[in-house]
Figure 1 (tube, rainbow, N blue to C red):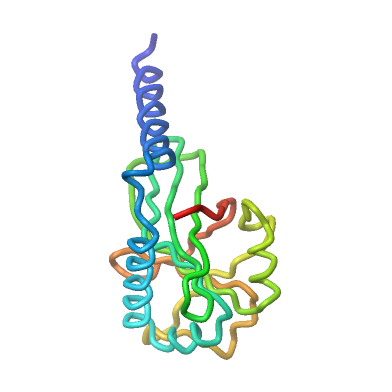
Figure 2 (cartoon, rainbow, N blue to C red):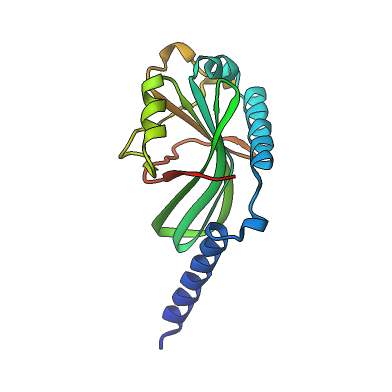
Length: 187
């Protein structure tokens, strides 16, 4: 056996084990609904503090889906997983997870937060009716770039679904949620 194959298989096994641990953690170790909700509200507060006019945009939204922490890990084959909460007009309406996989050059792990705003009742209704909603298949999310001065131009947003992706350093650019699957969970 060539040593490259052995390390590739070991890396694959490590990624599979990590994803299994993330996706199939025992209920006792999973975050509770109130914990997810508190983390989501803290994520929104940070977002409002960092992105000028984001609160104005949130006030225009019909609902907001917040994933406070999505962990992405990979070694050739990767995946990501996170849990979040849907707020409709500020009230908790349900809990969701997001999961996706990828193949290609990748090494390591990172965490990020995602905020998805439903700007129309129609987009929200379609999301809530679909079990296992897939980004890019069941609906497209326009990832918003922040302009000069950290502001969002709320007048130019016409998409029914808009999203923001950020890490500890701030908003991230040129990222996508395409291929991610969002499913309602019990908490």
